[in-house]
Image 1 (cartoon, rainbow, N blue to C red):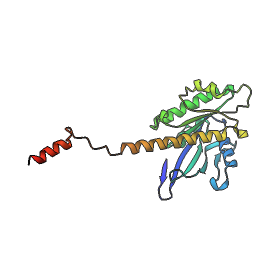
Image 2: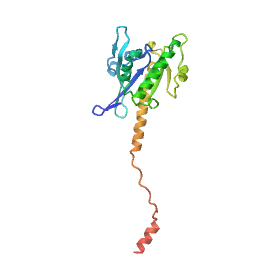
Image 3: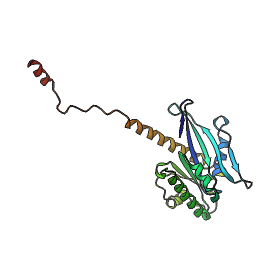
Image 4: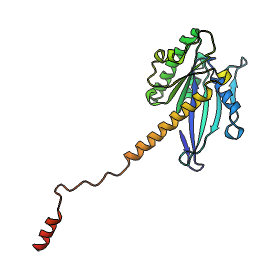
Length: 225
């Protein structure tokens, strides 16, 4: 998170993480296609000759004002291939929220679990507690034969309250529900942190006298002068 007080902008970073070919880039492409031009940047993609993400995809969105600030969502994807592990870790750095895109195909369970464990390991190495970070799991490609559902992945990933959403990203199904959920989670957490910080800095009330003095006592003292 970065706040530009001069421009009154709140910059939030959301990273789409997951195994290769799970649909991370497709999510950003569908968001880009639907959001009005005046509310988004160009979609930047660095790809290989095989049309695979080489380093990252990037898209910035502008939301309505919140508490006088204009939130700008910076959406990134990481490369899914294992040999780009260093790139995935770099892109993940400084994330305010994560969308983990799993492939619902039955034969991709192992790939999904490996990517999930790698993501948690990267966060731990960077000192970002996974439990404190907003995370949404998107189980993509629900149209495949034998596709595993979000409910199937709750125990597989040992989700502890993190939302799991089914999607068919290529048809825009679940794409904006996922984006809305992670955005609400990130902004909600920031608002809670702001309230906690404000309460922590609130002056404590003055302590009451250990021996309260009543009006009768005051009058008696005055009469005794």
